[in-house]
Image 1 (cartoon, one colour):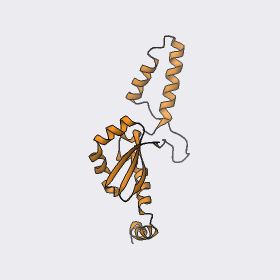
Image 2 (cartoon, rainbow, N blue to C red; image 1 turned 90 degrees about the horizontal axis):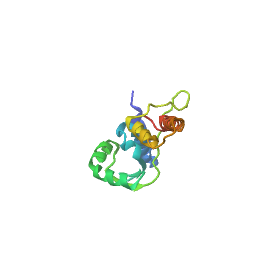
Image 3 (cartoon, helix red, strand yellow; image 1 turned 45 degrees about the vertical axis):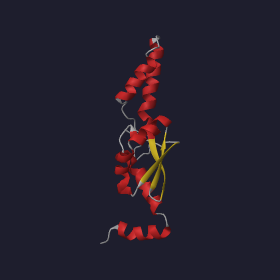
Image 4 (tube, rainbow, N blue to C red; image 1 turned 60 degrees about the vertical axis):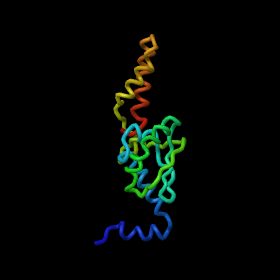
Length: 147
């Protein structure tokens, strides 16, 4: 028996879609390649001649990711990435969905999210309003992003 990859790779190369296939593999593996918060603030956009274009969601994250360039490249080398380029743009995040039903699966609110919510409601004196805001924020954050 031959591995499917050994049969498919020559056909993929002939069709000129090798980098498209590698980009899709990177997108599929994104949350396992990078942990939060990195995986939440950057996403792969395009792969061309070994250079991966990464979108970041803010100039601050773009600057921070520049400091991590070597580590990012090290993790992406297995996918044939030799260089990365960063730009501010739309960051796509995978939603946490049940593979059988396609419905969103709630995630627990992280410690970072809990601190954010605490800061959000800190100045609210009305307890009923504070509870409503806290519940709305927890509900939003629990289905927002995978993990």
